[in-house]
Image (cartoon, rainbow, N blue to C red; front, side, top):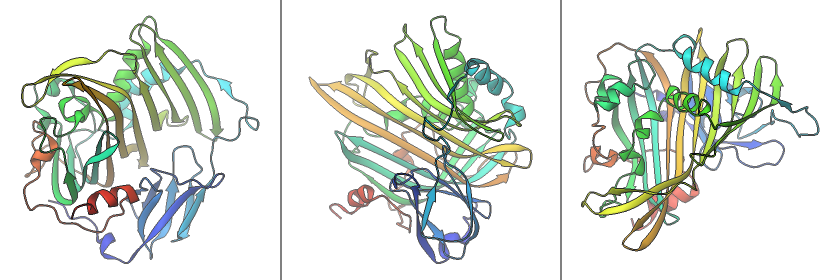
Length: 379
């Protein structure tokens, strides 16, 4: 088991990252300090060592800045300017761009055995109330930073991804007493797939090749080698719409940042069964994925993987709504080998079933105000 850096043992203060135009907090802003990665929470806040220097702060649609020293308030300027100030141009190569990056994935991104010190965070809600929150240190090993469908079909996850939730910072669930416990993600291959950007590219490449696919793309910002491309992909047959944007590096021919929303609210729910073998109907109506990368030497490494969604269940003549939200911050990277981890969780189980009684040890990490209220309730 690897040890996390001594960063949190140092004196830390809260950095607040805001939009320089409207003053709103920026969620998922990336902070890079001495090759260690952090992301802001739902309130745009993140704990950083007050002695940190040369702090890189970046968010997908904002200008990157370098701070010489720690400061409590950081304001980032949006790179996508007011529509009146920039000429929005049509971009007709969305499908070919997706195909090119997908086919050349192994040459563009780091695809050798990798080991990460990571922060794993998962939050579920039921009927607009938090029902589960898990925050943990994670050792994450991957064979090549890629999703492998052949192993997934065999349920042989350990051959290409392994994880050890070795330090549980926060865990609370009110789902454990129901037959619907765990996460909707746990019953889907997306639970594994959404850790890897090539899985999203695979699905998008398949989508744009549909006969009825409607594809719209626009260049909404261009800054040196970086182009921000918005896209909208729609299939009348499957009633699914994908919208979002890529940040594309022209020189390296690589997507460095991706944010995408999928909307399938018009799709009919499907039948499934819960752990008590009771039949119910389920549908994820919409969701988001976010991937962020940084360059190390001549290859790109993952720094953040986010997946979230809204769903409903029809059970016992009642409709229940909920959300799921999972974030993986790839804090530190190490070259690895094919051996993987000694201790690892069982991806065949619901994630929460891998947590042993008495394993939770609360440690300093910045929760949002809503999350803090959930943890503190009924202590």
